[in-house]
Every structure is written in C-alpha cells, then in structure tokens.
Length: 241
Image (cartoon, rainbow, N blue to C red):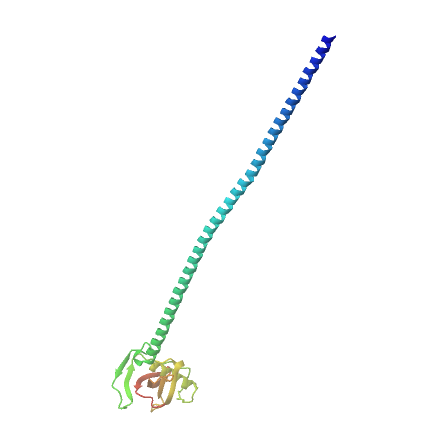
C-alpha cells in the first residue's frame, strides 16, 4: 500500500512538472507572439511615418523645382517684354523722325514754291526773258515771255473793259495779272488796277500778300481768248501802298 501511495505521489509530481512546463511554454509563446506583433506594428508604423515624410519631401522638392522653372520662365518673359517694348519705342522714334523729316521737306518745298511763284524768272512754265527796262527809276527789272497765253474768258460779243471790282472782266484781269507775276491768285494782293492807255490794255500793281516784293504787270485783251500778260516789271518799292 505504501508503494502504491508513492507511485501516486510521484505521478502527481510529474503532472505538476508537466503543467508548469506547459505554462512556461505557453507564456513563452505568448511573449514571442507579442514581441513579433509589436515588432511588425513598429515596422509598419515606422514605414508609414517615413513614407509620408518622403512623399512630403518629394512634393516639396517638386514645389521648389516648379517655382524655379516658373521664375526662369517669368524672367525670360520679362526679357522678351522689355525687348519688345524697346523695339516698339525705337520704331516709334524712327517713325517720328521720319515724319519730322517729311514735314520739314514739305515745308521747305512749300517755301521754295512760294519763292518761285513770287519770282517772275520762275513763274509757271513760261520762260521769262529779261529785257531793257523803262526809264522809271523804281523799276528793278523788266521781263517778257513768249510762253504767256490768254487766260480764257466767259465773255462774248464786243468786249468792254470793266474796272468794277468783282465783275467778270475784273476777275479775268486778276487771273492774267497773277499769271504774269507768277503769284497764286488766291494769295495775290492787288494794290492798283488801271487802264493801260487803250480800251484793250490794263496795268496792275500786285504783290503776294504783304510781301514787299512788288510787280507791275501789263496785260492786253485778245478777242475770244481773254486777257494775256505781255510785260512784268519788278519794282524796287511798292509805289501804290
């Protein structure tokens, strides 16, 4: 009986050892599992933490690069804009200079034309010839021309000279005098218009506006064709002013 009790007691001890061993193994398994789980979770967490940072850094790098490119592009655009502005200003200056030159040339041509028109030697297309002057001491030079033609007339029938200002005959005489003096009729000032000694002749003293250069123009009537200049005297002074 004592032997059986010893066997049972021994068996109980063995079972107790087995239980303790199983408990230890279970605890170890749990510890290992927890360790593995925590390790994996830490790795995922670290990975998750690192990836956003890398993504952020990458995005930041892109954002930095993008403004840099944009800035370069903006600088290029600014340079182009400055270049275009300078080119536009230069073209505008050239156009302005060209307009000034054209205006100056036009003014010079107008002045030359006015001088030519006021000079009997350059009057119209008629070639003037200087001839011996009269005994009048106020005459500086005397001219005539084979190129002078009658200026035409609106009058018909027998002609009667009229010195009424504004009449048809007066206006036609004015036109012939302007042709002989080489002055534009619109700017010509008639200081005196008188009979030339016969019903078909007249003499006018004229100048271009208040220009001191004065001319005495002799005209004669041509039947059916109107008045025609026949002689021009350039005067030293305006004796009809």
